Length: 110
Length: 112
Image (tube, rainbow over all chains, first blue to last red; front, side, top):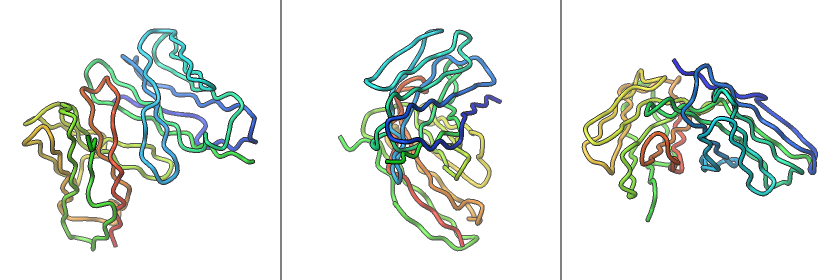
């Protein structure tokens, strides 16, 4: 079945440093979605990428979808304490179920 | 709009007990799903539904039942609770599997 892996599992950074999480699928995806879950909260949608090689930006966050549509990345520039949380990617193949990655938990050292 | 409403927020069960986690959405979404979240395991799909009257299994369906008699409601039933089912459960809904998913607040379940 479809598997979506994320690395790293945990990341600790000094405030102001950059952060990147990588998402890899065993199969070609129709699209990739990214979610953020604050500690004690529920996942909240950030963005969706659909096209091969697509790059989207949201302020300090940059999202990329690989050319083969099997991998994706989320890069945060100059992290802030508000970036703390777990970041999940999620993907589908066609109209199949949405499968989530294992998540990357980001902690910030002030 | 309330979005996705999950109840209860917390629950403690004894091994062997049964219970139903409730999930309701008021966005007229067709696609609804249940996930469990365990440390280091991410969000694992238990069951999902693409519309009223249609349900299907996810990655970890054993020990759980679902039904979708209406568009709004998608309850998750634990038939005979086991300690391995201790987890945080999230219900989500979206227009379809390729669009933004809205999550409920989660249910923290402990089975002793």
